[in-house]
Amino acid sequence: MTPRVEHLGRSGERVVLVHGSLIAGMAAWQEQRDLARQRRLVIVERHGYGEHASTGRVDLERDERDLIEVLEDGAHLVGTSMGGVVALRVAGRRPELIRSLTVIEPPLLADHGGDAIVDRAIEQVREAYRRGRDEPDSAFLRRFLAAIEFDMPLPDPLPAPLVQATTLLRSEQPWAVRAPLLEVASASYAKLVISGGSSPVFERVCDALARDVGAERMLFSGSPHAVQRIGGPFNDYLEGFLSRVEAQTAEKMSSDAKA
Image 1 (cartoon, rainbow, N blue to C red):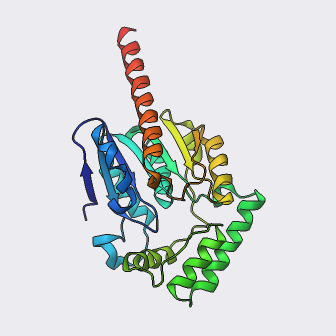
Image 2 (cartoon, one colour; image 1 turned 45 degrees about the vertical axis):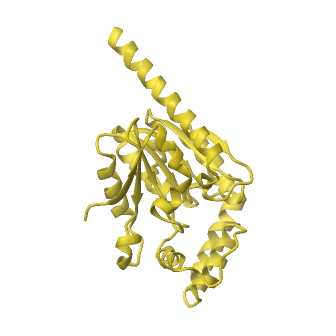
């Protein structure tokens, strides 16, 4: 099945955007429409969401295959939350397809164990899944969010898209997912790790991840987990990062041509 994507913009380098677990497709990237003035945006809908909802479960390996297909001969790659994990996994295994890599609060708990805050979150998330098997969606989701120290109000009742997303979340194992960080660290493309300061757990993970892979680090303090939803400040920073990457690439190509 061909990956479902939406396209915005007609000029500039391609930027592939990968959503996380609780908000999918274009809904996750509404505030990035302004970037389409300078960029060709490609918004990926991960397997299990939207038209693929009948699967009822997350398949990260399928997501990776889909993302590799969407990247074609190369693009900038941006992933948020679990979409950041998918982006990191592809970036580690297919570095030749990556112009730059940006991840927003990826839940790489297993890769950053040994920190007391992260270790506690791993146990709390596992317990949330154990106790949540027989709980209603709203109770499970509240327990999960508390485990990762998110203070996020939930509508009551949950709207249909959030019920679908919660069903998929139940099929994940966020305490166990990993990414090939050594391969990402050794790759030559530029990396950026972004967080919003809403969860001490994710701040620890993002700080450690940036050190592990040699990434630029940016904190938009007071932002939600899906930091891209703050719009303007995020867009401006991302555009600046991408422009710097492209200028450095062009300079290197020019130097190589003269050598």
